[in-house]
Length: 569
Image 1 (tube, helix red, strand yellow):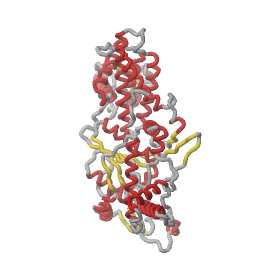
Image 2 (cartoon, rainbow, N blue to C red):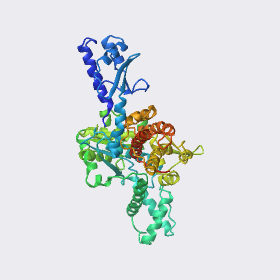
Image 3 (cartoon, rainbow, N blue to C red):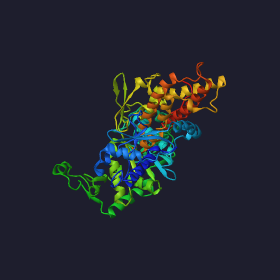
Image 4 (tube, rainbow, N blue to C red):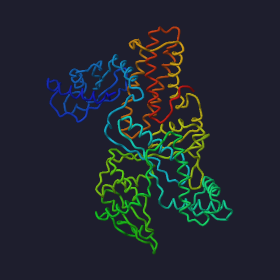
């Protein structure tokens, strides 16, 4: 099913040119694009354009006069009922009722792939999300990352892209050493040794259970092993938990990229060499341009770090790539990782990152630019963190202290579909307060219940129809009333919502729209009956056909959001 606004924009642009050729409008340069949007007043039309008001200065005419001239010269195709001018200068466009009703059949014919678009046809995309360090079970913060990313991947597939969902397996660096040392201490404690956890060690009970399993499997045979062995054991155990947890909320990755591979194949240091060759690297105790106050804070025995001269590319200050200890910061291997992504030939890349990673994301983009890569295919979705709220109080979470609610605990509490929707239903840029009291409700106040119940009600109608031998074959859709037609018009907004969510990297638009559609559906369902004695058979058949299309659209929306479409509740 095609997007309507681009066709309407072409229609209006052609009308402007015809009006100019006829002398009804003066000559002026046409705008690069003609804006067309959903009308805020459906009674006036399905779409509206403010282009006449934008042209008033160039045409030296009143906006309403311009709009009337454009409307007169608009050659409306069969799917348009009328094009009208309205004060103060809007152009309102009404879709043909016959065309709208025919879309019921188009929806049914398309089935599971309804509203698929071809924007990404022949192109490849990659979405990288979660990428949590394997230092513990997933928290709800990681969950938000994964739900945003997997929903964007679903959207990209609906737009025709060949999509790869990737997990960047961050298994290098200081945090992994601390994890290995923490498990080593827990293992020795499980053997009865009085060994303290390392400073800043991971204190959660999850490592205690891993240590006990190591004792069960190996006895005391590992007591003289170095921390690296325990790092590997912890990593293996954590990742099994992570993969299982993500599967519970319908997230399954196509590829897992191992950060260690960037060190093993020399990519990390190759990037550093390339930056140095291009004059973007220097070694110093403090950054160039540092204030006297910054310099005074450095201890006498401070050693040089390796700095990226990112200010040459518009940054407000230079960034450290290798610490004075010789250990790379996150930015250096991340630049190498993104070089690998671009070399794999993806046309479109999405990274889902917490807002605390914004500087790192900017540094990576500048690093790519510095060594000759175009960073524009890389798109970053930044999200705020999540707090759980119960009884009006917030729960605080810390992975290192072991004080957190895991994703699994949250799913056990409220269910996977609720977790997905509640996280998706807020803009990534907004802080999310996850209301546990609301999430546990099985009533219309809970938006998950409300949306899924629309699909359930459709399924229920078809069970009743089958029991009574009623079919929708040969339905006369012209018998549908105004309420049903208004609902069908709302369903036809779906492709525009998909495109908007894609353009704006805003998967929450799906959640908002699904709820809007449900709010239109339920009052209609209460009044527009099918299996009722007073409903004529031909009207019942038409309504049943409309409900068949509605069920397909609700299932499509729920699937795009990574949720189930139940047939009973």
